[in-house]
Length: 87
Image (cartoon, rainbow, N blue to C red; front, side, top):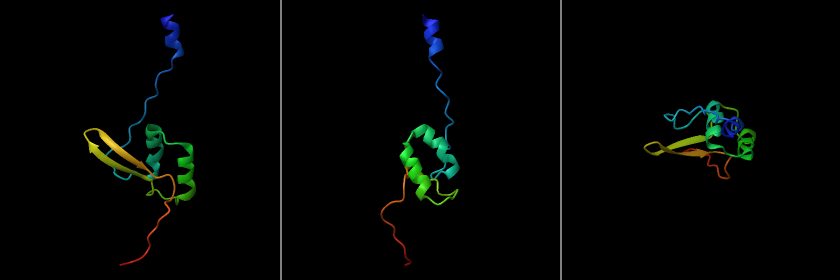
């Protein structure tokens, strides 16, 4: 019975860990972060629809909390407030 159960359970896929030294990951890193954080499809489609196609606009911000803990801020869509102007 044990061997049968072992065959039925698929191994957990290995995730590629993202580069934690980059505070604002590029768009190309977004799929790796999404696999790890697992934000919903509607968030990703909102980002893709409303964000300019730029390698620099990854829509992610990392905050180191200490040790090996990080807070990942994920942008899903353009916010309601925008300030334009010069001083």
